[in-house]
Length: 256
View (cartoon, rainbow, N blue to C red):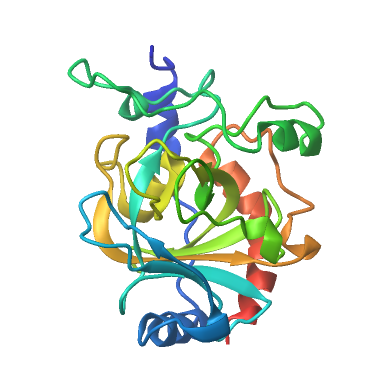
């Protein structure tokens, strides 16, 4: 893919919209990581953090936030962050999302799971989410494998705001894609390039993510989690991130 000629200038001028982790979110992070997710708190388990895992020990969990939120938990840990480059890259194309010549099977898709919804909520202003602009999280598992998990069955709305604790900071994103069955196991822990860059800097790419399982992904239930003021036609990460911060700040009050 040919990089946008304005990319380097935009990246140089861009400031990362990150929030210092509030005390209640830090407390939730510490509590939620410890101990198992079991009983009715465990909505579905058996997922893998990466293909090389010996067994699926990750789950979609509602411990401490029953009916209010869902997060991904592993064995006394959270998840890693693989990089998703799916979506519309016709503007602000980033070479970090390009497939190297040696890679025979490029996993990047031209659309996200909620392309039609994006067009509706944006009033046709954009064709799809752009991984280089929109900080989206890949959440839920669909396809011809087992287990699968549909967050909508538990009250999570497409394009709703999610909270991501990563790199000692809090970033807001939206639920913008789902894990498909193009891997040998059902995986969790993935986000768009723009979100990953906000978390861990410009060294991440479509081929190199964040391997440590210290990233907390939280989705919130209810219609009020869908941002009413989102600037879907934003020209860069900061413009979009700033448009959903107010919604995110309200939602994280549920993490107590």
